[in-house]
Length: 233
Ligand SMILES: [Zn+2]
Image: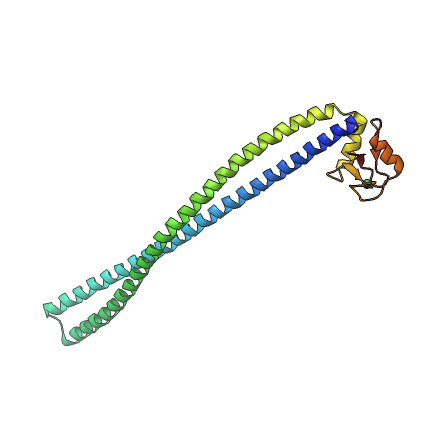
């Protein structure tokens, strides 16, 4: 095989490896981005659960305060009743107030108990969720770290390939390099084999002359159909 074509093949291999590594890096970045977003989502859900619980606790507190308030009022009415220096009408009004307030208080107490039970249930749930979320976050954080290392490694390999690419390009005549670069814009395989007289790039037969040219150690054979650079093994 023509030495120049051999170098071109080498360059093509390097270029394709570079492409693969660049894709891998892109992929790693995408995965990392997704994992980061998933972690944020988990944290947001945790925060929502926390906020809901906080809201419930505040609601419970307000109910209990209302109960205390009513309790105080009932005691106050009761004291006035016990003093016994009021008219029958006032007594009747006070008794009615006590009755109403007691009813209201009991209702509030029931509601407060329901809320407390809901708080307990949610707190239990949250504890379970919390450890589940944490282990999921730890897991994803570990994966992000792994990806970070993988990216670093791939970046290193990519740099090495870029260096070899520079070296190989120096060894190829400029005219051939520009031909290769031009082809490279539309294909990842600008240099292809002729197999049984067929260009492996476009699958078309090439002329006997081209085959002869590809066999010789002088000059460069190109496919009449797709312009790829050809070689014979
Ligand atoms: Zn072809």
